[in-house]
Image (cartoon, rainbow, N blue to C red; front, side, top):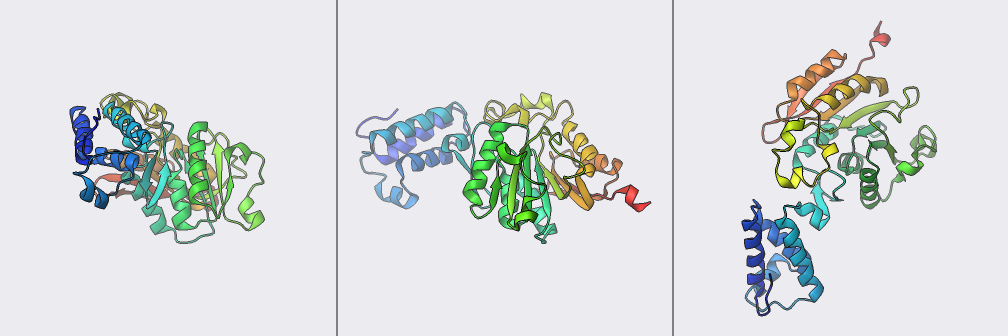
Length: 317
């Protein structure tokens, strides 16, 4: 792709043209990010040197060429760069987790707005990259946060993010989680984040594990819709984190049925949903005895979060 004698401006323009021809919607911006990452040239520096002959190190040439080639194959930019910003934090991502999206910030912001108290126990079910659990921990300062996922590879990504972004907090990886006491935060007086390898609630115990808040962004795309998604999602993000089975509601049905067993009295649930699933998920919670259920819209005006509060009916008799 690159030829000797090209200027910096020509190098960038060539990368942009290749991505445009490959059908990449944000071809200009994506090429810039790959250019900046490979060559370490800021916007200001580029404006000053765009007409100058490009003479970078060979490794930088190869990195840019490789990045453009991968993006032209529709591999997500975030996988190539290895990071994605979410809630003002930079998360490590790879092919084993969903890429954190701005839509999910509505879920995090809703929990933070509704729960100012610090001494609570919170569970993030289907944590993936850990962006929800880590962001809630970083911004909410909650004393006891747990994060669970069926994928060991995803948990390694989440643990890496917690280690990077929550350096002052006790971190319990999934490999050690089964051997710790019931509530390490209460025992040590030190704020903690704990990871668990679990197929939904299979590794949790009703008599021991009770939370004030359970959040989840489960797989919710109907199976037959996945093939219609952009190649970046369909071909590169984990199918298991996308597929909500035939109607997209399978995991919400399970969460609605099981969460009450692991919530304290008046505990709350918050679920991210697809834009057309609000009423259906609200009805699932209503049917299981949750109260104060409601649907919350994102900044674009789409249904994005369903929440509700748990009341143990046996305690009210």
